[in-house]
Amino acid sequence: MNRNDKQAYDRGTSLFSPDGRIYQVEYAREAVKRGAPVLGIRTVDGVVLAARRATQSKLMEAESIEKLHKLEDTLGAATAGHVADARKLVDFARTTAQRERLRYGEPIGVETLTKAITDNIQESTQSGGIRPYGASLLIGGVENGEGRLFAADPSGTPQEWKAVAIGGHRDDVQAALEAGYSDDLTLEDGLTLAVTALLEADPDLESGELNIVTVSEAGYEVVDEGTASEVFADATAEEPEE
Image (tube, rainbow, N blue to C red; front, top):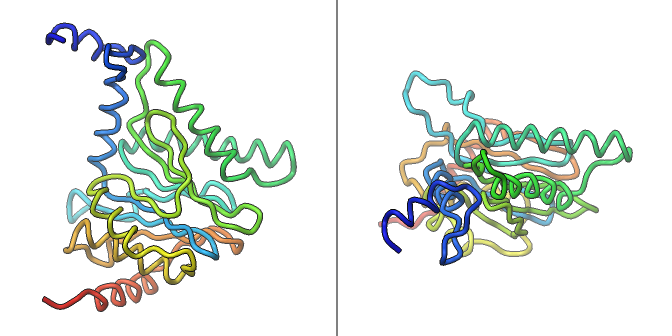
């Protein structure tokens, strides 16, 4: 394929190249990789969602960087990639969850909400005049008393995970999750593993940059700075000395 042919497929948001690729979707995935790392961990008690809030300047308020979002009482989302695109998807998720509760009088299921989000994402890959979302989401919550965790990428593909990372340094964080995960993790264990995995992406990570929430039958709860600092201290103390 010569350069001109490739550029022709490059410009079309809904065109397959001869080798079966949609370049704009692949570029959207690259946008996600440029974001700060975000992860989710399923435990026996619920789900842990964690992110690193990386500020562009010391003068920026870290709290203004939103990576973790409450969708429903027992549903949360973590985002990586273009912030504006992610915000639109979060708004869609919240509206869908509220509509389900008003219609049926009960919270929407984690898998049902995930597939509604990914259906919306997929439409942007097959319609002219629009581009794919440059963001990925992790959707975590409690369904029938059990934690469930899903990932949605710019192609509109939903996948269920026990533990998963998206965003920058994804391979390093995912490797740490695979090494430290077990099926009997508690929420407290999940917090420690989350911090340990984020440290793999950036050994210079500071506790003040952590943004962590837990989603369980008790609801969507933000981990306060004091608890985050204690978890951070425990995670760094467990690192082997050189």
